[in-house]
Image (cartoon, rainbow over all chains, first blue to last red; front, side, top):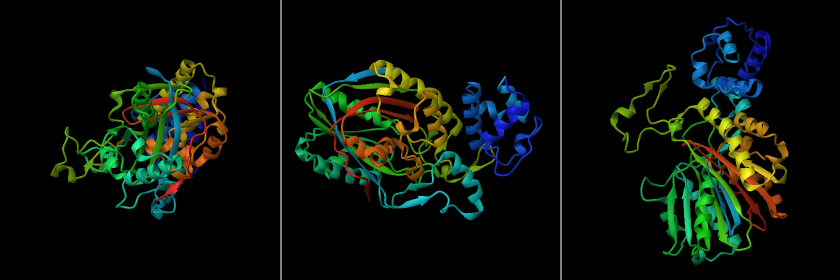
Length: 74
Length: 345
């Protein structure tokens, strides 16, 4: 299992931010302009390929923070 | 899981027609949206698409493809016993486009003609239906016209194309192997909810409605649940391909080319990596032709491997997946088939 820091790096690559963003576990997802359906696609693939976990768009919709997404990898 | 083997049917040829009109996902995007669009293009891998003129329909493209294919095959029109059209962009709601095309292509009145309503998964299903009819006897030669006019329905994914594929009876043809599946529980993942008999178009559908994300949408617009489609595609297609290979007693090394529906780069790359396939065996036309719905397999064969397919016997695995939800794959040996160069209309 990755640490939160390792997860955040993979998460950041999966979302493909347009500008540099400093992410922590407490970062509110809705405050991120790139947190959209395209980001969801990237994160779903990242979970599948990195953690062998099949998550859905609905799993991501209920997440409020980056840490909430990290918990899905557990 | 429906698996099937079809014998005595030869893949005789295929032609692809796309509109001349090219749309750039970047250059034709309004400047204020360009930065966001560049991020989308980087991830979906689609830079340009082909879009019909307003007066042009899918069947116009398919007609040009069929005319060229019949000419190159040197088939007489009276030899065509069956004509199957697979589209979700029919000329009219009724009658079936295939019957209109029977007259337009000047085929005989004893030609069997009907439509099948499938999208991105269409190609293997079409080969299976026509192949079964030919294998059963009576029908010697037939055409399948596959494609859609979908570039104008939603951007920046979809692109227009029409294709024609010819199958014929041949007792010496190697078997074709199929794996075909459906899951109606995913019917809402890609849907045009208004305009059918369940919800006929009414005056209320002219008023935009705010969705759960706070975005105003037309009730008549295509509903596309991207995450659901991605999850479905990347979870279902790799095992279906493995099942088909096992059913056919074939290793992935024995397949010369794997042609997948061109959905978007994220989906296609995930499927390729999960199956452990080298990029050179998995040709792609996403960058230049986008997602051409059911036509995307023929488009990719014509644009990327047309010459290789004419050089000698090739074993190809064709796999389509999408709206329905529906997914179908097949293994076909192609030898001596006719592949005209890409037609632009």
